[in-house]
Image 1 (cartoon, rainbow, N blue to C red):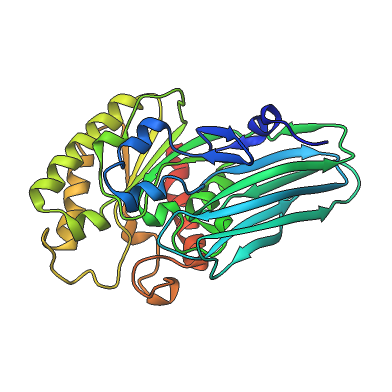
Image 2 (image 1 turned 180 degrees about the vertical axis):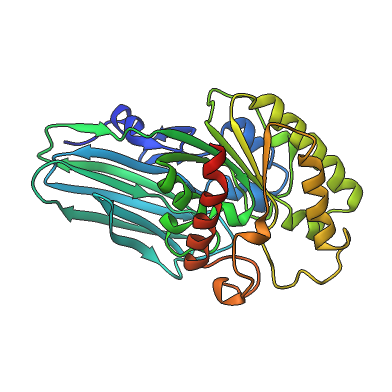
Amino acid sequence: MLLTLDEIEKITFGANRIVKDDYFSFHRMSLTEQSVYAQNDDLFRKTYATSGIRLDFETDACSIAFSYKMTRASSRKSTFFDVYINGVFVESIGEINAGENIKGQYYRQLANGKKRIIVYFSNLYSLQLKEVCLGEATFIKPYNYDISILAYGDSITQGYDAIFPSCSYINQLALKLNAYVYNKAIGGDIFRPQLIEKNNIIPDIVTVAYGTNDWSHCTREEFAENLVNFLNKLVLNYSDSKIFVITPIWRKDFEKQTAYGDFSDLIQTIENECEKYNSITLVKGEELLPHTDLLFSDGYLHPNDLGMRIYADSLYKKMKGNI
């Protein structure tokens, strides 16, 4: 069974749209959302990363095969996609030092009978697929999730620097909640009110995790204005969703001074502003991870795969009583 665009669309989760040319190209951002970053080449490139997107379906196929291309869409050169069969992480395909593009063919023989297949797309590159084929399949059925998550955030939410995309904290959180994710996070981003748009998706949960870049790049005045406007639009546009705002997690260099000032002061400002909204549940990010550089891939800011899993476990425990 060679899958058509219509069939690919039915089994894809976390994409705003799929474009068929030589390859199937998967986009997590709408054209309007992409336009927000049009004046910044670095941020705009990251809108093409396929973070949060996945194929998830049940089938009786005896094999799965496709050609793939991964195109760099971040400041990193490591990219993988992960394959799960019946909940088991069976393999990850990619390279630690991939360069700008890599191409290849994927093939896996499958056991007899019905099985669930998940392909987690690259968090930091754009994964494109071609000639997706399910050998001798008599059916293909999209997986049925309980809920959906809309995730706003910076590099940590986008997936920096988990090696395996399925290990990012937002993907791990989604696994625990039986949810799929629309991941709108952009590495290096700040509270950006213009990113919030009213669209056709009505998520059950919205998560927001900014602040660490605001502290590095914004003045107090800029930050205060962005924060207030962002939260106002968020609450207005997602009045039917459960909203969780996560303050910045621990970073090793938190004691330095920036144009904003104290890191702890910025966190307190977020907490104070969130308290004004009954519809927002605040999660204290400094409580989600042990304060040790061993859980960070770069030693100070971006959690590694283990750090991401601990982050997800802690966040789930904070959230579950409010869902």
